[in-house]
Image (cartoon, rainbow, N blue to C red):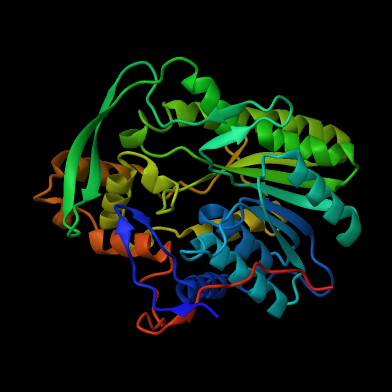
Length: 402
């Protein structure tokens, strides 16, 4: 037994420990927020969620299980408990697996490098042995700092940089006492092969490799549909995001979708799309300069009208499974971000951004909400959890039932 009281300790937006009970309660909250399933009895469709433990990938997993009645495989990369607690994704995965079992969903979770062919082989084996040799859906939601090419062994590293020239932007930080500060930072532009490296990690190369790997083994069902999760965002963040290195990678992801859509349509009557999701507080998004400030201001403008990731992914699953028509823009993308980019919302956020300073930020942004959302990423500030009580941190990775 490894019980102890876990207090939140952080360096900026990064917390050193995670709370198992808070992570479990958070997963339960997300499951409870999903409308009743639309499937009848019997086995549901088989789905593979790559990047299943955090952010939009976690939302895709829970919405798929609770709304679409999927079964299948989730792939993620998390650290087990040791001297410190396990990562939040470790505990969220254990909680998701428990809820899946309680609701009769056969969901297997694999922990390892999703970029590797060894993981692809493991997934292929499970699909063949446990899930009837067919895959109906693949959701790709991977945000990673680096990727090893399985063919060459080359290691690529992604960077968050503007393209062409330096970019000055406002950003939100909190000092050691939790006092918010609005600072201006200047980010140097991409140089050398920064763009190519970022595209190699965050573009569509690995997504396409997953699809072709499974197709070559005849594991894709007729009508197979795949979606990769993407983001466009506001003009306020465009220089560092959509027009920067990461945006170039997202453009590659969307071009890959068009290529895969044509191939799958011809071979299986299937589809490939990107899903453009909206702004949210995630462990990945808080690393991007300016995003924390933007999201806090967006919440200040919209309040509870912001659409949480779990509700966005319910909408995506409804479209993927035919509950609602697949609604694509001119680029073949599902758009779940229209509420964020509505002209009235963007105008109000832009006005607040222009006047945001350390002195005015608490009046313009919902920083209490933002701070709570950061803490919830690690299982803290979740209602109904006794943070003064000792809790077991040595939670095992979920093993599938026979």
